[in-house]
Length: 272
Image 1 (spheres, rainbow, N blue to C red):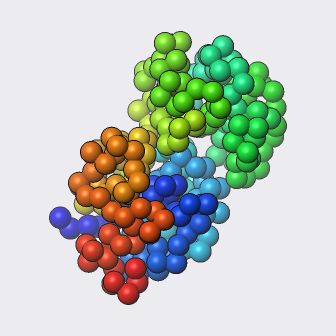
Image 2: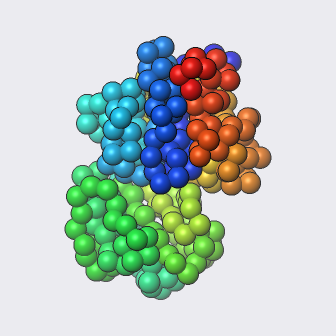
């Protein structure tokens, strides 16, 4: 397979524990750019999260698939390339269901410019999201138009919360709900996910998705794996991701993305 582009998840895959970019990974991304192979990031983080974590390689990142596919972003130009908002009625439905199912959950809504976030989001996560924000009661989150909802709950694990929302009527026909962590959900419009994002990105870049190499580690990366020609899971990945992947790389702590790029001959071993 000829690899014409590389896309990677961020947390748990490309970034080291603590959310930093390792030196070998930084060099590998720059080497891809010099070789004319576009590097893309695909993440549940907002565009501000991509901007902040990949600042050291900003000009070498061809495109950012942010908010689980809902927003396409060009880090170098600071431009939004696409935006798929949630229907206001859907946001209201999800928030109302959450207030019944998980009344202490934290909710953050992102509209491509900034966040509308509840105080409980910080209490659960211990951190605020990146970018401008307004803190509001949960009942006011539904009043804001948004492209993605992030939900954090300290009591229900992600799979249980997804199931509870489905029982409350928030199924895949209403919204796509994915998770990368044990107690953190991303809610976006129906049919939107990282697979949707990479297909939109490939259209813009003039590349067939079958010629894309993807790295990931979480359940929200499964749609990305299904959309591309070659998939690689970090060694520390969710079991379902390890099963779905074509290859297994070293963990993010060991900068497995850089190592696999060198193993595949896409960058020089010295660069990795």
